[in-house]
Amino acid sequence: MPRTAPLQLFQRDHCPLCDRALEVLARARAPEFETVWIDDDTALEARYGARVPVLRRADGGELDWPFDAGAVRAFLAG
Image (cartoon, rainbow, N blue to C red; front, side, top):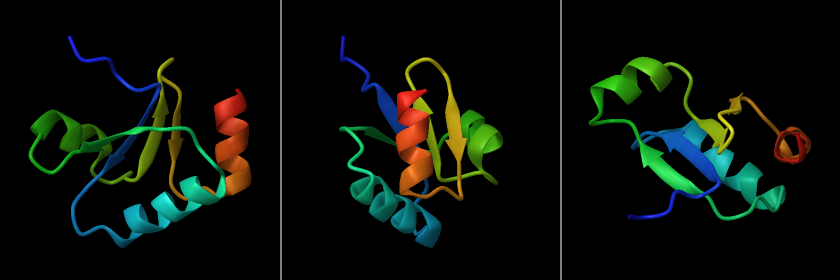
């Protein structure tokens, strides 16, 4: 069974905010994460559609956009 990354970034295709979130994650030196595309998943679209991009930890904690590098580091530490 594939192992889930400790972090997931929920995003959609053609999303400028998602592109900005990727830049912020790079600046924050976030560890490797799994990208989860919500476009073709009705349940994920219902949950995250208006909120993407959303960073999710393995413990279920979520960080909604907008976030900056400092917020990402604090989220990862907490």
